[in-house]
Length: 72
Length: 147
Image 1 (spheres, rainbow over the protein chains, first blue to last red):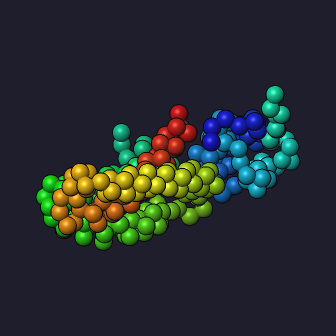
Image 2: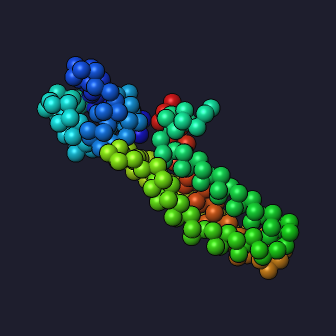
Image 3: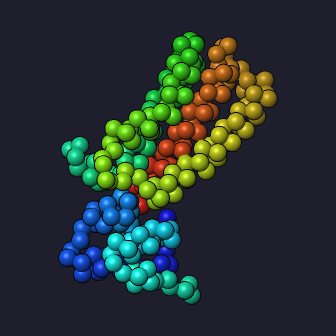
């Protein structure tokens, strides 16, 4: 569960969208606020479907939200 | 800590897991005390009745806390809950393996089964301990995830 090579820009994108709250994003994606917290902290890698739902809720493409860092 | 504060900090899955840890620990204690110390069959009968009912507790607790338009659990909770299956299987395997070994020898059999209720109670206790291990694993995973 902890530590993932997938990084994300969820926090920045939330603030760029009128300081959207974690709860508002969670409700828009159909997940719990704790999952948004875990995602922003980089402690959880979402499923592909949830990734698309988050990108859709933030109004951006999935690659604008998530990046994959190739393990060294 | 007040109840709303706990509710905000801990997700539903974690609160439910801690609650079930208490329920199964109580069952284990009742079985051990009633069967080996008291020599009675009533605790075994009570646990046998309560055990199948525990599977409905999650559904009941979830329906109590469900709010329209808000997810109570999601894929992350399912991933954490999946750890419980592993813990359950490991605990059950260890318990029943050790029990088979213990009952194979006369000296340990006398200690394990001093009365007629003891062997059935040991079998049921294995299920209780495996459930306890599953819920404790989930609760611990949630706690680690928040840290």
